[in-house]
Amino acid sequence: MGAAMHRIHVGNALSAFGLGFTVPYLYVYVAQVRGLGSVTAGLVLAVFAVAALIVLPFAGRAIVRRGPLPVLLTALVTAALGALSLGLSASASTVLLSAAALGAGQAVMQPALATMIVDCSSSETRSRAFAMQFFLQNLGLGVGGLIGGHLVDTSNPSSFTLLFAIEAAMFLLLVVVMVTARIPRTPRVEEAAGQSGGTGWKQLLGNRAMVQLCVLGFVLFFACYGQFESGLSAYGVEAAGISTSALGTALAANTLVIVVAQFAVLKYVERRKRSRVIAAVGLIWAVAWAVAGYAGLGHGSQTMATAAFISTYALFGLGEAMLSPTLAPLVADLAPTGMAGQYNSAFALVKQLALAIGPAVGGPLGASLHGPYIVAFLLFSLGITALAVRLGRQLTDVQNQPSLARSRVVTQGGAPADTVAAAEA
View 1 (cartoon, rainbow, N blue to C red):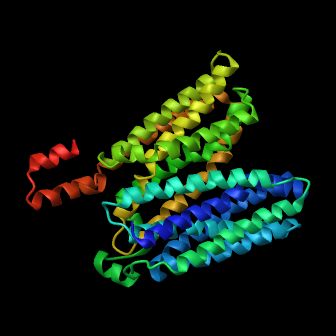
View 2 (spheres, rainbow, N blue to C red):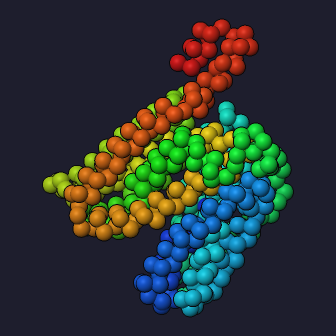
């Protein structure tokens, strides 16, 4: 990795660390510490999703026209102001406005940083770069949440103000880090238009492979991330009798599997077709939902139910580790020259939409209709496998398996073909 990529990874870790400080405690802060009630606290969480859905369609265009760095710096300053004002807010109106600024800035950071990774990597190194990004994001969120949990005191509002101030400081520190980064220049939108015959959303929607990937991405995020802190946790508490401490252990198991398995899984993923990797994730998650079904609907002991529930989160973590070096690089490879920002923003928009709808659907279902909830999301997971197989038919050989390009280059350079095949086996 070059110096620019190192700075990008530091940026990912800092932003995740800052978010980990506050996100787990937003509801408690608004509802209890500021005394604004559960309705306002729920609206704050909704505002995060709404703000992201509003700004992301424009973020991609801005990244293409201006480059990812100016867009990232604007997002960081906006998020820093939102975080700081959220820590000082005492009324419902100021809390909601501050949350909107923080949510908008946070949403735009994702495609901007992803586009910078694309610009600073090649097709051969991209999977590893995105795997490192995901690893650092989870590590930052986990460490930030752990430290933040020891700093907060619900009887002392100033402790929460300190948390939000630290989060704002992380974003501003990232501004300093990224200002000095030398990011390779990407073609402007006019140059990209000359090569690909059109730009913007119309061109993206005309790319059948990208449209299918967005549909697949929606189902992935809806059936996994959209259930973690809503439907699945509600199901665990109501159907399986899981305690809050066991729920925390399950979330920790998810993070631990990602951190431990990420780079071991990467070696496997890099040599396989991307569509087959995603299809395998669907099968793994189907097993995870079946295990969750045993936890809540089986007739085993409470110890067995708790172990099964924790295993469900661990299996989800394994699937996430397989997806991190697969999905984002595939989005980049599908994007025409100079359009990575537009494609990254579109995929981020799909993710945010799934994360907004997932809890709204899964929460009530998981809390009351236990059997139908498990069956529905087990079928969603099998649907992921079917959609991934179908997507594979729309991809070129190199898009589906970038290692083929490296093999062809080596073979053309004079190495015996059987030596190349043996090296890949």
